[in-house]
Structure formats: structure tokens, C-alpha cells
Amino acid sequence: MGGVLVVDDDESSRRLLSVALTADAHDVRAVATGREAIDLGLRFRPSVLLADWVLKDNVNGLNVVEVLQAVFPDLRAILMTPCSPDDLHADVGRPRLADIVEKPLSQERIRESVRSALPSRSGSPRKPMLAVIEVGPHGSILFANARAREMLAQTHAGPDTDNLGEVLAPEHFVDLDAAVKRWVPVTVRAERHQRWYLRSQPPVSGESRLIVCRPQSEPRSWDSALVATLLNLRDHQRGRWPFQGRVLVVDNAAASCGWLVSTFESLGAGCYAVAHIQAVPRLLLADEGIDFLMVQCGLGREAISRCVATARGIRPHLTVLATAATDHTRQCREIGIEHFFLEPWRADDLIKALAARISRCTRCGHGLPLRRARTGEVPERWACAHCGAINEGLLDDQSPSEYASHVQHVSAG
Image (cartoon, rainbow, N blue to C red; front, side):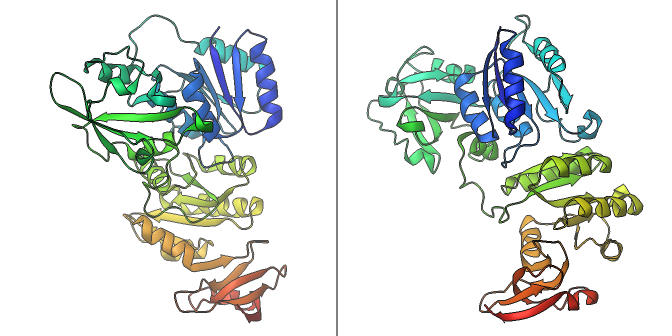
């Protein structure tokens, strides 16, 4: 039987899945977060990944699938989701999924799904998107995936070399610590002059580290977001998402939905995307960390209005955003949507708009007529008239007039 990696942030689910799959003689490892799943998966190298889509960090189950399949393209992936598989069509086009299993889970359904997903030996292996090497102390090569072996085969050291030092030109020294911060150029021993670029993660527990290699011929920006997620790097994002909460995108058009997801993820925001409004309540109940809802106005005013009312009944402090290619600002305000963005919009403008206005109380979700202090301004303290929570900011003259009585001035900040 093959190795199975389980990622689920619910402890009871992890235990249930581990027991059920171990009974079928699988070698099972289980972790709680997407980050742990990537770090362990790159070293454990399972045959099957069983990933919960909704995880409580900004690396969701689909992100885990995408990263691990970029290194091990024949990895078979099963996605567990609180939604119907039909709701996910706009977001599952990137990774390859062997199965989608709707929660709540049954042991027999999961066991059968894993049995069916186990890779057969027939067919040609796929080519990895990334070349990845695990390097131990003193440059020892502990593992290289298929694409990395192809690159090593082009050097004098050959594909089976066990030390990175044998690959590099004699006069060349590579600082892998520097490669944590930037792509580092190295010259390799080969018949023809060859230069690679390396990017590294810090050593794990002072032992091995993973490095991504690419030939000089490939652009430096090549899949930077994917590499950054794999190595847990942060510096590739200029304007990181300044909020704790995750984003739920609702859009039934795959192209625009993919663009929205890519935009939010490039900022560092945890992001889910569904095709149908009906999936919103289940996701809000499944992940209490969703603080932003982005809807495409093409879904229809009445449907969006009902969705917003239901969503705020579940998550009172939810910030709702809307987008469209034509101006729907007035219609959005009429149904209680604070922010409308006319396509195409810039990510920096979206962040600025969200950061500037404090439109809802963080405790109870009551509407507030406040904005954040700008450079040189001194924030003041305001009590929510509904629950008494203290919010810091300044009065916002652009807020709805009915919000004026929703705060009481307490003191200067």
C-alpha cells in the first residue's frame, strides 16, 4: 500500500481518517495546517494526498495540492469540502484531483476513494513543473525530484551525484542562506557554460533544507508565487494583505474567478472561490476566519441581496465587496454592500479602500461612521452604541447618514 498524507485542521477528523486508512495498511501521516502539509509532503513524498479544502491558515487544501503536484506531478489528490463538488468548478481547474469528497465524511467513502486514487504503474510519468533538491549538512543531496535529476544529468556530476559541491564549478561558492532572500546565480560543471539560479528555505531544525533550481534561460519571475509558497517565503509580495481574515469569492465565470483568486493570493490573502451563492453559508460556518466576501454583480441583485443578508446573519462583522465591468455602486449601497470595485481594479486600490474605512464594529457588526486615521492625524476612541466595543478612528463623512448615531465619542487616542 502507498503512503497517504492527511491534512485536516479538525483533530477528530484527522484521528478518524488515520485509523480508517491505517486499517487498510497505508502508511499514514496527518497534519493540521496547509503549511505543515507542504513541509512534510515534500519530504514524506506520499502516493495520495487527502486534503481538507477549508483550513485555518492561509494555505488551503487546493494550495497544498498545487504546490506538491508542481514537485510530484503524479501525486494523486483527494479534496474534502463542505460544499457540493458542483460549487467548486471555478476553482479546481488548476490542480488535478482524483476525487472530491463532500463532508461530513464516512469511513467507507474515504477508504474507497483512497483505494481508487492509488496510482497504477501504467502510463508515462508527468514532468514536474519545479526542480527541487533536498540538501543536507555539508551539501549532501538527500533527494532530487525528476526535473532536478534532469538538470543534474546535464552536469559532469551526473544525475546520481550525492553532493551539491560536485555540481558547482570548482571556484564557485554558493551561499544558501543568501538564497533564502533572493535568487542566487551559480555556475555548474558542464561541457558548455551553464548557470543556474537557486532559491532556498532556511534549514529545518538545523538539518536539511529544500532548494528550487532553475536554468538561466527561464525568467526570474517564473512562478514566483508558487516557489514562495513551497519555500514559505514572504518577500515576493510588495503589498501583502494587511488583514487577518480570509476572502471568499463567488463568481460563476471561471476566467474572472481565476483572476480574482490569483489577485488575492498574490497579496498573501487566504482565498476560497465558489461558483454558486448557495455555497456561501456552508463555507462561513466551516471557516470562522472568513472576514471578506467578494461577489460578482452578474450573479443578480436579488440573489446577492439574499446572500448578503444570510452571510451577515452568520458573520455580523463580514465585509462585503462587489465587482463588475459596469458601475453598480448605487445598487450595491442599496443592498448593504460597502465597497464596489469597477473592473479592472488595482490590488493596491482595494487594500487602500478596505483599510481606510471602519464600516462595521469588529465585535457585533453594527454599522459605524468611522475611518482610519491618515498620516499626521490622531485617532479618537469611539464606543459602539450597540455593544459598547471601543473602536479607534475618525468620523467618516462618506458613511451612510443613518450610521451617525451608531457611535459615542469616548476620548482622543
